[in-house]
Image 1 (tube, rainbow, N blue to C red):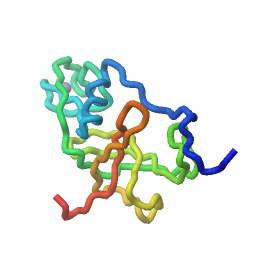
Image 2 (cartoon, helix red, strand yellow):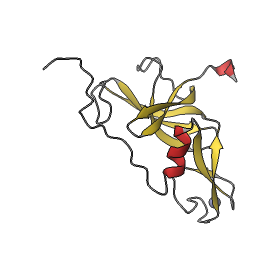
Image 3 (cartoon, protein in one colour):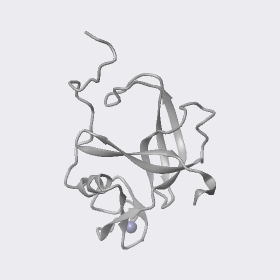
Image 4 (cartoon, rainbow, N blue to C red):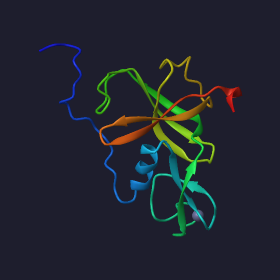
Length: 146
Ligand SMILES: [Zn+2]
């Protein structure tokens, strides 16, 4: 019983790719953020599904997006969550991609405090390997960086 050991034996909650989400996970493994776009109304959307949630069309495609986003909302958790074995605090956030798609994720690369996490702050995607998948997480982006 030693403290601070890597907990390799502890199963982590990792998303399971499904046929509908496989292109998304193929993208994150390649370092790309992919969402779907409707060819009928040209809007992007996420979570993956075969029919456009905006207009009901089934003529949709996968596209790679920029990975630029802004912080839409978040909550700070001070307790470890399933799949986040390294403990809190961490931010469970909803980010809005510049393509207008909202995505639930975690914020990394900054202090997890209300002072550091400003709504609408610019973010960019980073990919973290976890289990068999690469999770898209978001870190602060410099506003003048683009
Ligand atoms: Zn549509």
